[in-house]
Length: 507
Image (tube, rainbow, N blue to C red; front, side):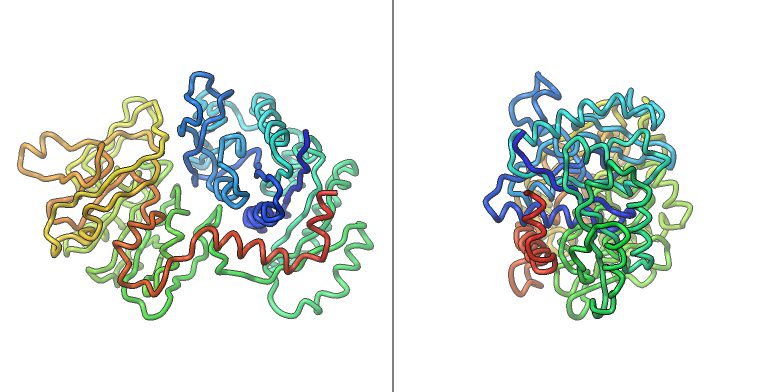
C-alpha cells in the first residue's frame, strides 16, 4: 500500500471535519499527487449517485452508476480530482426515524444490516471498510480520511469503525479540529486527547482551532499551555468563514436568510425533520437578488408574494415528513400559495407529497393521503431506484401561466434516489384533471395552471443550463463553480496552517 493517510478528526459533530477534509483533498491534489477521500461510515440523508465498485456486485457493468455515497465524500472526490466511487464511503446510514436508519453498504441498501442493532453491525461491516480503504491506498499517493462525531465517544469505543480504529489501521497522521466559536475549545481538545488510550494519542499530530473571530494573538498562552500538557502543537487557527461556497454536510448551511443585493425573489424550502439532499440548493445562494430561506412554520410563508417559490425538497421518510407538515399547518399554507398562482416545486419526496396518495404495500415508507396539488399516485417498491438521469423539459404551456416556462426545451442532467414510483391518477384523469408531463421517462409533471411542478430529478439547480434559463437575467457574471470553491478552500488552508505542517503530515 503506497498511500500516506491524513485523517481529520473533530472534538464534536459540526467542528469542521468535512470542509477541512475537502480542502486538504484539493491542497494535496494541486501538488500533483493522486488523492482520494475516505469516510468509513457517514450518517446523512444527503447522498449522490456514483460508480459501483465491481467487487460489490460482480454482475454490474464496468462503471455502472447505480450506487450511492454521502454527498460530502462526493464533493471531496471532486476536490481531489478523482472519480467518485463507492469505496470512498463504504457505509452510509440514512436516518428514517429517530431510532432507525436505512443501512447502505457499498452503495446498496442492506435490509439485513438495517434490522441489526447498532453495536452488532461493526463486525459485519468492518471487512468491507478495510477492503475499501486498502484498495484506495493501493491506487493513490494520499488518502484523506474524515472521522465522524468525536473519537472520544467512550461509550462507542468497543464498536468503533470510523475513528481511531480506522486511524490505527491506516497508520494515519491525524489532525484534531474544534469549533472555537462554540466556546470551550481548549477543554474540548484536551478532554478528547485525555480520553484516548496512549496507543491512539500518538496518532494525533496537531490541533486545529476553527471558526475563530478576532485577534489570534489573544489566544496566548492557551496553545502553548495545551502543548505543554499534551505534547501536541496547535498547527492552525482558521478564521470564521461563512461564505466558502461548499454545502454543509449536516444542518441547513446556516440559519440566516441571505441575499446579494435587493431581494427580488424568495425561495422558501420547507425544512421537515427528514429532509434529504439539501446540498443541491447551495447554488441558489449565489444568485443576486434571490433569498434562500428555510421554513418550518406557516408564519414564515405568510409574507410570500405570488412570484416567490415554495420548494418541498427530498425526504428520507415521505409519509412521516408529510404528517409533520400537516401538524405544523404548512399543508394549508402551501395550498393557499398555490391557489393564488404562487410557484410550488416538489423534488423527489416533495413530488410524492404533492400527489393524491402514498401507497406502501411493502412497509417501506408508510401510507398517507397527499396534498392533492397534482393528480398523481405514488407506490413504494422494495427495489430502490439509484441512477443518474438526463432529460429535457417540455412545459408546452403559455409563458404567462408557468414560472417554469423558461425551462421549456432545456436539456438537464441530475440523479435519482427513491423507492417510490409515481404515475398519473387514472381515475382523476378520466374526470378531467390534468397532469402535464414536463420531463421524459416519468421524471416530472405539472398542473394545468403550470404553477405547481413535481420532479424526481435531483440537481436541477446544479445544472448550468437550468440556472441560466431560470435566473440568467439576474446574473451579472458566471455563477461560481465548484472548481473555484475547491481552489479557494485549498488557498485558505495553505495560508492559515503553520508552514510545512501539511506537507510534514506525509513524511
